Amino acid sequence: SDAEAVETLFIEKGIPHAISEIAVVELGDASFFGDCLTALLEAETNVHFCYSLMSRPNGRPTLAFYLDDLEFGRSIL
Image (tube, rainbow, N blue to C red; front, side):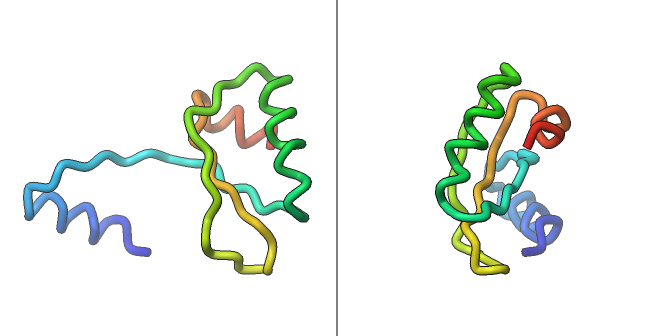
């Protein structure tokens, strides 16, 4: 939960790492996953990867997307 501390630790220990900004979407329910993918497809933006998050702060499914254009993708989602 503390990205800066983790990055500092990795640097100190010589551990290779990369930082990627992602868009996180909280779904009303699991059926909205297809709607997210359809919206991104229609907007012609590339999804490099998508994964579900274990944390569910409001009891709803959440997805993390790594997109070609993060700001554009966020506006679509």
